[in-house]
Image (cartoon, rainbow, N blue to C red):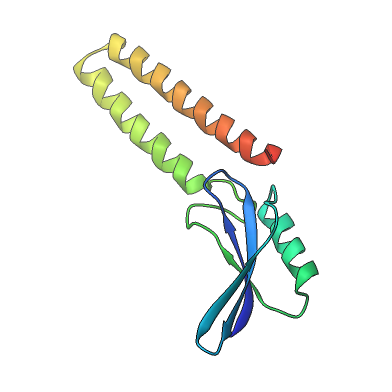
Length: 122
């Protein structure tokens, strides 16, 4: 692929794109001037700028098409919490159960805040 456009997610949650070309063995990269709120917006902006080029999206494996964490991640967390909860109830009783419930709520709230922040486009 000598000329194409790449789209990727930045650490702050925004989506960027860049034009990439191989100019006689030298790599040329032209970065978009601003970040987009969603992957779809970045792809649309890249296609507007370079309509005839292939757009390649670099999406982490634990994200879905809308840029949010996939359900498999949540299922793993819930399964682990359930196993720990069952072990705690059998061995220690109710106080550990309460502690685990509070921790699970805190983790879920944090994940929800992160998902909401991604969706707000800030």
